[in-house]
Length: 128
Image (cartoon, rainbow, N blue to C red):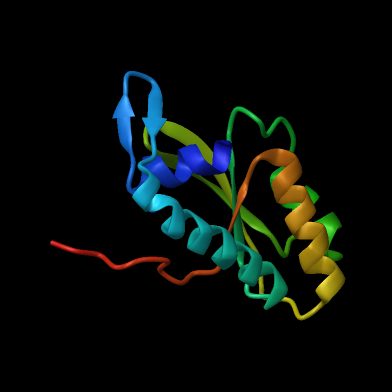
């Protein structure tokens, strides 16, 4: 559910905000599936280069958790704060890896923390 809210809040998925609830029209279901498939591909194709997690959830050093999950040396992951739709997020960034088990561990960590994986590519078109 958190991922759907984030996709709506960032405009990745066409939604309407009614009060405090995002409404997704049935015509957006194919786009929702495409976003989910893109996320899976980021992990399967080993393209993940960053993770974003709501700051309220991160009560420890996210960088260290990512390094541990991926088997990276200490200091390979840098973190920064980003605000999306008024909500603070911690973003962890690391060098690409080719280790399949590291990407699966990273996906599990993202799911555990309610985070999203990023690959540095635009997922949709920007329009005027």
